[in-house]
Image 1 (cartoon, one colour):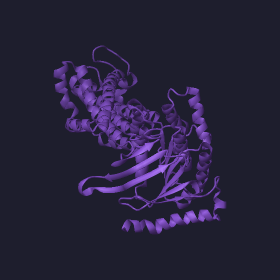
Image 2 (cartoon, each protein chain N blue to C red; image 1 turned 30 degrees about the vertical axis):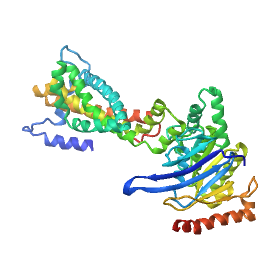
Image 3 (tube, rainbow over the protein chains, first blue to last red; image 1 turned 180 degrees about the horizontal axis):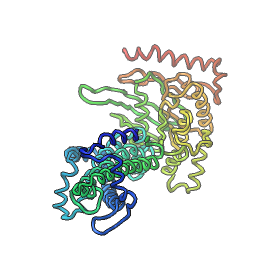
Image 4 (cartoon, one colour; image 1 turned 180 degrees about the vertical axis):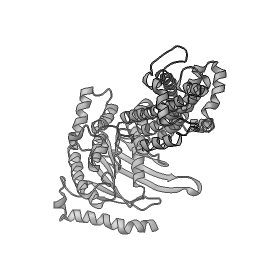
Length: 246
Length: 265
């Protein structure tokens, strides 16, 4: 299938007037980038590895924050009717704001690209985590709650022995959607804030008309996005201890 | 019988309010002696599970009281352990951990850690489940899950054991097998048991008294039949026993005739 696509692409883009390069030209142009991902000439002139690493660092930080706060808030609105009524409408409105719309506001607030990018990741990833966690908590079967009541589990015991494991499948669904969105958002945010990062790399390549570089970067972005999703799914399988069906 | 141990006094239950109001239980009073095995039987939807839940404290009575050893009970607690119809084991815990969770919670501070381990194993031994300690509920059969559910309830050393149609979802052979084991355990430990069932044979085989409930709405106790059969009981020998046939007949007649009369009255 991949081979067939490559052939079609090659045929379509082989004419001298084509606006996009064929695969053979992409490989020839980016040969240096592929073989030397670790070079560092100072400034923003670095190998792809460093760009990807910078992007991943931002995602890791923003996503960790989002996961922590998202699960906490999700548990809150999932277990308290009052919190649900107060916060849910707010969340429903906030979550529809496109990630990049937050960027100018966060740039104004933080006056620096780095924390702004991290904030954008955070604000993008947190909504599906909150909402899925809350649904998971609300859907804990009454049977498990009854068991907890007969045993007179206190709040903390209920949280760790029943609530988290019972809601784990939902929480990990939220976490998976969250990591996907983070990766989408970081590429876009980096195009705007500059500095080292895969998003900046793509934008810089566009400005220098290095179309082949863009195509190579897109392949990397896709593969890494896929790997991130698999990693979270795997963690879910591990932690869910048989309750998460991935 | 030496005095009342568990006492249900004028318990009523209505759900909803206004137009949607429905009266489920009307004026239920019942006294259960220590060590007695009570079966509550009635057509489905007659509110027998609601009654059990009120005794368990999981549902609040609209009026009336439940006393255990002279003290009113209003909320759930391990002194009234429930074996749920659908076992309600936590699927992310192993068989051992499901029981251990109850033991750890109930005997925290009263038993040392090795004692709690021993106690968990002893209760799983009672139901013959020590071969599957490391298995999760998803990996064992329905009958085994119910055994573990029973072990978990027994492990709480409850004053009253509440069984909510414990064998309802099992095939006939497994059910018979588990009934034998419950009889053995009851003979050995002398628990006070309140069991909900819709199986006439099960009620007669296991219990000292059978409480028959009328059809809902506003179900109440129609008749109470004392089963005059010596223990230990053997299901095959009983088949020809006059008392067994009489008890069975009484319950069947109630369920198929009188429960409707009372409803019409």
